[in-house]
Length: 188
Image 1 (cartoon, rainbow, N blue to C red):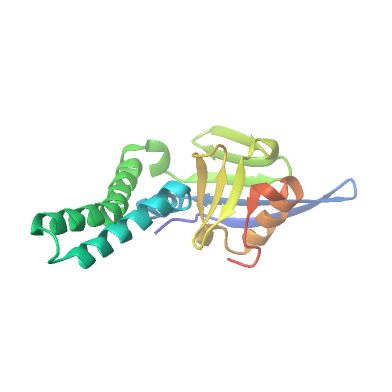
Image 2 (image 1 turned 30 degrees about the horizontal axis):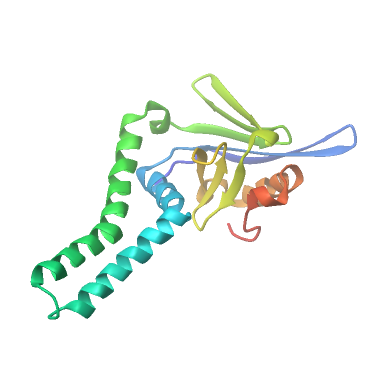
């Protein structure tokens, strides 16, 4: 599971304008990283094609059983299993390795999301990602993903933000173009 040290929503009135922000701390687990890797792998053309090829090869194995040599049927079964089982298994092992070898991911990350952007800090070091630098923001069933490029993202379990999710969605809608948003505003 992840660890949430504290949660708070800050709303200030500054010069007649309401300023919203959300702050929280998250410790990423191998399960969180696995969910991100699976999402990233299977929400693109390559992941969809790999799944379709895997299913097609297994169907071919069943349809050709007894009509071709047993070696071909076994080869079809092995290829189907490789496409459908190997990739998720490999992603799981990679996720565990990423978490266990990264000192940054082993410790809690402090997030602050406000009108200026996303601010992440840990052990006195801070990284700031302005809204104009955000490639896209995506919500999945279990995570909020803030992409800084096509392949790099801040992985935030939705359980970590809880009631702050609506505040984060509001900030994103105010600061990002619609084509950069794939958010479910009602999902917490």
